[in-house]
Length: 150
Image (spheres, helix red, strand yellow):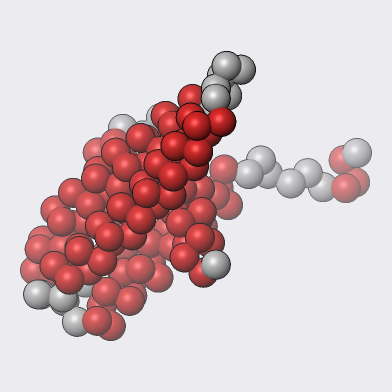
């Protein structure tokens, strides 16, 4: 159950990143620069750690994006009216497999990070990443109007 929630959060975050980037008209590079600055600050990465970490981190993000893209394409197939029961069964399994693939990628890259980062730093990076995405989601909401204005 915990794994499913984590995957759901990652999918939501990926979507939120895309929406936020489109909403604020940030290029992929601008978005990544902001993300890198935020994570570097919050996880207290040294310049050397950041230099080693971010190329791998963005490589991982690109791979995860491809896995999620494939899963979304499978999901869209299920919207077709003539989808058979066998095709639905395959869609369900393919989507689950994509989630497993993303988890495997996360584990693979955490092991790569451990070559030059402490586990505490990796934890702080994960925490900063989640905080960055929360901030994005918070900033996407329209500003609240005062009740007096109504």
